[in-house]
Image 1 (spheres, helix red, strand yellow):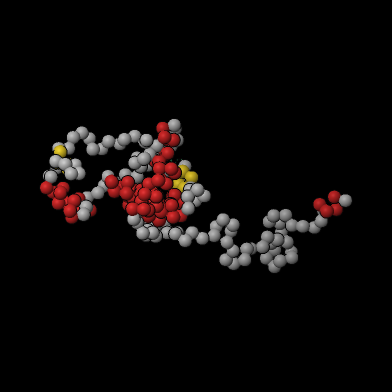
Image 2 (cartoon, protein in one colour):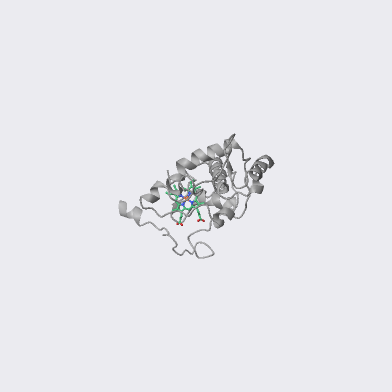
Length: 191
Ligand code: HEC
């Protein structure tokens, strides 16, 4: 008979119990229990406040990052990171531009956390992008930031000399110095 089964003595969620000394039917989890989905098994994890970069940055990593960035981030953040991608043009909240001091100074671990777990209206990409590719994207994001914020002192000596020789004009590779024309701050749109 179904009724007999349904009416057997049992505890509902959080119901009191005299069986255990603390008067609760619910038992505390065993010490060091890890909730499902919370296991810290990311071997490339870097804490939010750390500026460590866990991989060697080389051209290969940057090229991988550029490719992954264009696939996963540019639809919203734009190809250059201004926050004007296609999805934004269709009405989603515009992300902040990467080209601002707050995000230039944000530690690598912070950017990794945003990419992994999301931030505000942006969802996390832990399911779609494996850790190594997340770091490749961050390397490329840093390159984008540097592309608008480099100092002459950051250049290799050879290029710095060229820059000094040509004064305020721009040297085309292998060509004559050419006076700078127009705005160098063209944003180029999202795509
Ligand atoms: C669907 C659109 C979308 C995509 C795709 C996207 N983002 Fe975002 N991102 C946003 C929005 C919107 C914000 C701002 C969220 C807010 O303030 O609520 C944001 C914010 C950020 C921030 C700044 C956080 C801060 O402190 O202001 C970073 C860094 C970032 N995204 C990185 C990435 C990276 C890296 C990728 C690709 C792996 C990516 N985003 C993909 C929409 C997107």
